[in-house]
Every structure is written in C-alpha cells, then in structure tokens.
Amino acid sequence: MADWFLEARRRFCAWPRKIARRKPSAPGCVWIRGAALLLFCAHPAWALAGIVETLDGKTIEGRLHLGAAGVRVISSNAERIEINLTNLLRADFSMATNASASPDGASFGQDASHREDGALPAPWRSASIGSAERRGGAGQVDGVFTLEAVPRPRKMRGEALHFVYQTWDGDGEIVARVVSLQPRGAKGKPARAGVMMRAGLEPESANVSLSLSGGLGSLFRRWSRKGEKVVGDQRPEIKPPYWVKLARENGQIAGYLSTDGQSWKLAASSATDLPTRMFVGLAVLSRRDTIAAAALDRVSIRSTVPRAQFTPRVVLRDGTVIADHFVAMDETGITFSQEKRPLKVLTADVARLLFQPVFEASSLTPGRTGLLLSNGDFIDGEFRGLEGGWVMISSVLLGQRSYELNRRVAAVILRRVSPRMAPFEITTSDGSVWHPASLTVQEETLHVEEPLAGAREIPVPELLEIRRNATR
Image (tube, rainbow, N blue to C red):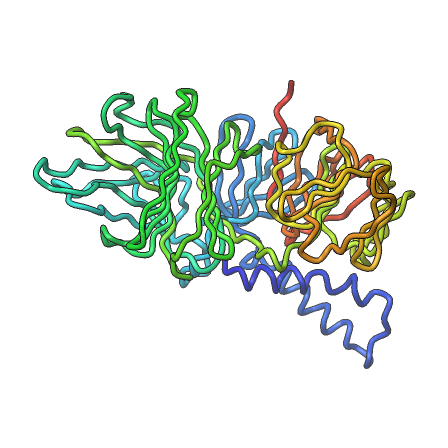
C-alpha cells in the first residue's frame, strides 16, 4: 500500500477527534462526512496489509483488522482467521514495502508467506551481478528468502553476487536476519550475505552493503567511482544467525548489527551519492570456487523520517517512548500537544527527551544527567524546565543557563531507563513505543494502559506492530 495512502488514511481517520467539539457548518454535513469516513476507514479493501506470527508456529499474511478477541486476518482468498491475543506472537501492520500496489489492490501479487512453489512474491525480483559462471537463484517460502550465488571464472575479475531487490524512493531502511550461510569457512575469501542498496544492477554501479561471513564477522562496504570505504568487525561471535540493517537519511547510509532485532549497534556509516530512486534488497556473495548459499528472514523495508521532520520523543523510565511535539515541561510534569493532552506524565517519571533521530545511549556514562549536544559534547547539570524552544539546566559550575533546542540539543538526560517487562510492545506510526501493563481490543481500536502515562486509544491506522515480549 502506498505511503501517501497510509498517511491520508491515518489523518482522515483521526478527523472525528478534531471536529468533536465543533458544530457542523450545515445540517447533515457531519452525517455525510461520517459516511465517507466509515467507507474509507472500515472497508476491507483499505485495511492495512500485514503479517501475523502465532505462538503455535503459524505465519499468516493478509489484511489486518482488530476484533473483539484480538487480530483478524483476511487472507488473499478472503478467508477470515481470528488470532486471539493469548496466541499472538507478533502482528506487523506495515507490510514493509513502498512498491506500487498490484491492479487488484493487494500489496503483493500473491500470498507471499504461503507460496508453495518457492517463487519470489511481487514486487521482489532477482538478478545475478558480476561475471559469474552461470546465473544464481533465489526463492521465498514462509517468509524465508534463499539466495544462491555462483562464483566467477578463475580468469575473470570482480565479484559475483546474487541480488534480491525492489525499487525504493527516498530515505528508508532495510532489516533482515541472516539465518544461515554456506560455506561457513573463515579462511581465505569467505562467502558473505546481508543487505544492500545499489544505484543500478550493473557491476560498476555505486552500492553500500552490510554483510556477514561464516566466521570473520561483519563487513560494511561503500563503493563508487569516487572511491571505496570498508569497515570490518572480525569478532567471531558475529555470525549467522544475526541481524543486519542499512538506513539511509539525508545522503548518509549507516549500517547496524543486532543479536535480537531490537537493540542495535552502529557498525559504520558513510556519505553516499546513491540516487533518490535506488535498488534495495538482499545479497549473497561468492568469493571462492564454490557456490554460496544463504537464508534470510524477518525482512522488512520501511520509510524513515527526515531529521528536519523528526518528532521529539519522551522516554519514560519504564522504557515507553511517546512521540509528541509537547508544549512545555517543568519540574512537575509535561504539557503535551492537543492530540496527546489526555496523557498525564510526571517529570519524575521521565528518563530522557530526544530531539534528534540518531541517539546512542551506550555512549552515556551511567548516572550522568544534563544535555547531550548535537556535536557530541555533554553538559552536566540538573533539568529545570523547557518552554518556547529553550531548555534550562542548572549546574554548580555554570549556574542556571538556557540552551536553544533548534539543531543544538540532541537529548536531555534526566535519569536511567529501567525497562519494565510488559506482556507486549506496541509500535505506532508516529514513532511511539508503548510498554503497557495491559491491553484490550475493541473493533479497530487497541486500548493500552501505561502505568506512568495513563490510558491511550490506538486506532488501526496508527499501528505498526504488536509484539509479544520474551518471558524471563
């Protein structure tokens, strides 16, 4: 489903909340608009496409709704499947692609998670790049992509890789888990598998990749006619199964690694001259005399918000993140914007305020409070207030001073974050991440109870993911 449609649908479905306190401009206008609203928000053809994973091992793809018991999936053959919250492992409402919808209105031409023939579902395509002895291959079954790259002839130069890709416009990120890779040998020039962004499908096209080997760690590589940048991490524990991510924002591409797909560590970053429209996907590289084969799953592609449009984040001490252009904050509490005004958060429950999308918490010294500036400098002090685009900090050395938020302050650090193990983690399209103590489902609405913020109603158009947390 196209990004513009999702955004239009989200805003339109929020319209009743905005006009609830207004009188209609003419008799009957609310009924007419309400009828259009009902059609736009509730018609099955416009439900969010996504994928559901259950505790009993099933993976189901289709149009997602919320019903009285949990998540309702309408598959490509119009079958309705009810998934109770007690059996829900994960529900992804985003259907991670910005490719054009197929003529029948589906985001993919076929039910991608249940292809028995193993063919790649639309819009994914594959290509062999480089001087290989023959074409490689690729397929997908139950969400697992398999790729095979054939080595180049001995007398030929360059690399031989197989690329599974789709076109992408603008900033965004691709995430995948490298499940397995063969051969796994760590000597010589090992095979590699991971994620890649390319300007074209020609061997000489500019590209950026983050890949893993079977025993030589990770490799971040940027190549273009202007030069090459390679950053490697040869720790032996970085090997399949392992998560990789590439994210492009404002001409910069960064590579990240993770053991669980949730906590990410920056591997490397670089400026790039890749065009706005590029190819994004999975790659396996053969660098020996044998065929390289890899399996990757949990593949997703998402848009990312440009830095200039970043919505500030309020990080609570229990790990919940609330995205909002909040109005002010004093030593007592936060004044949220009109949209989130019902939330009540005490300053004593706030751990951090984030004003830029790139934030590395690992760089902070535990127990240190104050301001983290955009240039990396840290100003120690105690928070005193925030209003009108300025934040006030008091310190023994400098006294009380004010700092302008616009492009200077990256974060305000008040106290440590001690995440509470909630049953589920809820991610929404505005960037919020909720760790509710409890949640209930009504028709097309998720009701969450956050101990430090209160109750929140989340309609389906605002949902990105419902994920069950692992039990200790």
